[in-house]
Amino acid sequence: MISRRKFFSNAVVTAGAAVLGASFGWGIHALDFWWLTIGVTLLVLPLNLRLYTPVARFFFIVSQATFAIFLLHRFVYEIYEHVPVPQNQNAEWLVGFFGSIGLWMAAVIPLRAYRAIVRRHGNPSTGALMLQR
Image 1 (cartoon, rainbow, N blue to C red):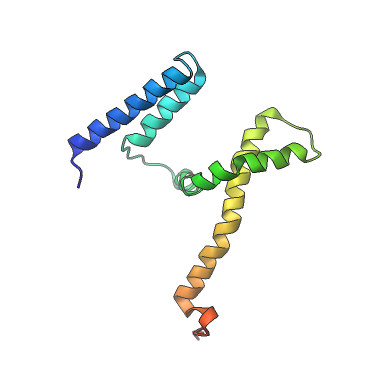
Image 2 (cartoon, rainbow, N blue to C red):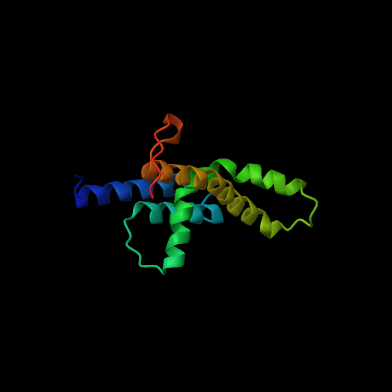
C-alpha cells in the first residue's frame, strides 16, 4: 500500500510535469494550457465528491466510455460533417462526444446483457442453458 505522503508527492510531481509540459507547448496565456493543467490536477488529486444520482451516473458512464470517446470522436465528427444538415460549429464537439458514448453503449449493452444471461442461466454456446421456472 502506498503511503499518503508518497501519493501526495507523486501527485505534485505529476501535476508539475503537466504544467511544465503545457507551458512549453502552449505558453501560460493559451486556454489549452489551463484546460490541461486543471484537468490533470483534478485527475491526480483524490477527491471525494457527493453528487446527485443522475449527475453521478452521467460521470460514471463518461468515465467508462473515455477510451471509446478517445478512439471514436473523430470518426463520429467526420460522419457529422457529411450529413446533409445545417452544420453548427458549437454542436460539433457535442456530436463527437455524445456520438462516441452512443457507439460505446451500443457495443457494451448487448455484451453486458449476454454476460448477465450466462451468469444466470449458464453458457448457451456449450448447450448448458438451464432455464429456471
